[in-house]
Image 1: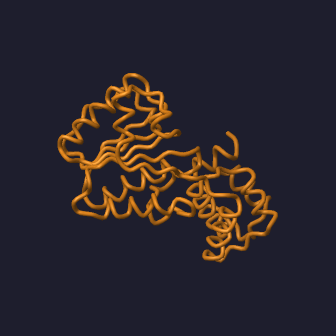
Image 2: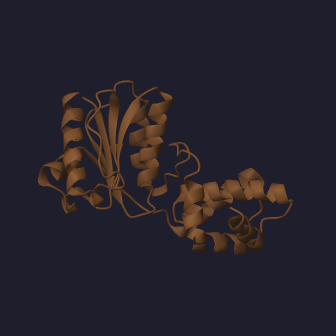
Length: 226
């Protein structure tokens, strides 16, 4: 397993939250989702997020799912790994659909069915994909529905932005990250800030456990002992 894969695995250790999402260039999308999930009468108008890998699409969908769970609301979830999607469940408060650009014909059929039934029951739909709606190679009735509501393009945070967040987060934990360690982490690990923050959590715990300063050998040692 590569270090990047390990970092991604670490990043999935805890449920992402809206509070832990670094907005940066994606402030408008985050504000929209905070208002939407925080409202007792969630708008049924669909929202579609698109952008490159590492821009935070899955983090935001998972964070919305977690926020709804804390409110006692259930959500339907569909991504490209679910080969046989379940039928729509009327107990779902919203439908969440990730990586729609990768959907098979079976998944597109399920997604369209979920969409139609969610709309009929005035339930929300939040979807994400790698391309704008007009560029999605999906069945036309699904593609047009994904694009008729709120659409936000997500940008991948720049390296200076990731560096600043990593530095600020390390300082908040009382961890000193040298420029060499910072370069090592940013060059070798996922561009996703959620994964980087979880990596920092693990580094903090590992440094305390081993009573060692955070150095490149320590980072390598921690990954070897995962």
